[in-house]
Length: 323
Ligand SMILES: C=C(O[C@@H]1C=C(C(=O)O)C=C[C@H]1O)C(=O)O
View (cartoon, rainbow, N blue to C red):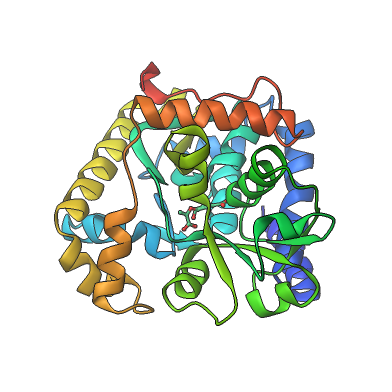
């Protein structure tokens, strides 16, 4: 693990956030081939003797959950970007954490999803956006830059443009900095707080296409951008602890959801946005994971498979066996 971290650090210091993506991809490939089918004894042996560790995203999209965890006096979760939290979950450094839907689908044999909790929207999401200088049809034959922090929104944009708008473009993963991305591309996909900031205070001359809204318009379904997951090995060894962690998270999300104005004004509320902006955003996000959300996930998984980005059999499986 220490060696993996060193590799990660070197890639990042050489290539910035693109290096982080590159190194985690290399690690994923190695783990998929070498590590997926066997348990990782050092991680699992250690895990039986310590409390489960929770991860959360540092983005505003987890503000309600972070607030709810703090309100119930839960141990502080490990906080990071979606990329970092996914790497930590897969490496056994955290046990229960949110993970980008595409990463979940890519690792569906290693992971189980927790029922009833997600990060998504039933319509506009405000923080998963495609920014363009002109109409979507104008992207034909041009380039679209995909922010390296995103897996799901990036693929969603590609699928929407190709299959719904009918536009073929060249896609390139780049560090998630809008001005740089749009230097050589007609469109750029951003997620998280950066996307939310660019949406709340749009740059003159840029069009903002909300990917949650477009997905809903196309399919009639909610979009799930991230699910909460646990490694199957941990779920098998420590089902009671996972059940307890799941209950804690549902409780935290429920509390946060009932106190959005307080969340928006609290330190857990990010500090990047003013209270009203954050309250509006938190009201738009959908943390539920019911039948319609699962239908959205399955529909997206099929489209993702068609584009070769996840395996044909990629599907969502729940801890406890229910949705
Ligand atoms: C709603 C969001 O969903 C996210 C989108 C992700 C992706 O596109 O891969 C990953 C994690 C989530 O943070 C957001 O980023 O604001």
